[in-house]
Length: 166
Image (cartoon, rainbow, N blue to C red; front, side, top):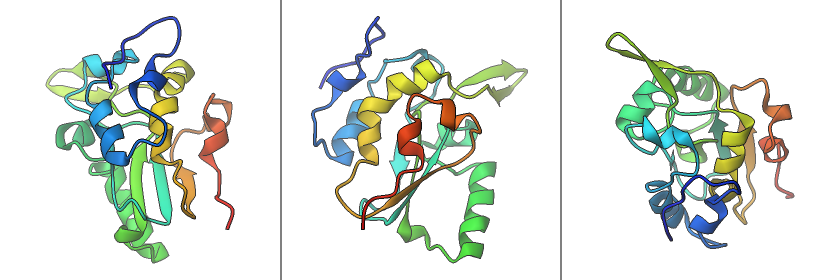
């Protein structure tokens, strides 16, 4: 696995081999430079939860708290999600959490880091090939996209509402 760098064609698929484990994907994400988001991010925010979870929830991008802590859904959106999960009776051990892109997009405002607009379709496209293997698991599962109302227009929209055949 090498460092992916921006180019005319998407370099991300070359970062990981087909059938890579979640651990291998996470290690590859640490060196990803397939889009500009890595430049300002503190760290990669890959995913958390059991590999065998029957449900995967996919956010749009990490926020400030997620960028600082290195885990998805630990900030304000995570609190809302945790309450919703609890109300729905979904145990945390039944959910794998991740985001479409793995770096925080932000702009400075004084001492604060403000969440910037959602990633462009180009960035989502650059992130999608290797990282989509996160949710391309050969087990029965359901993936649900959270947040971005533009998901149907995304180049990666096909995976946003897939349900595995049972």
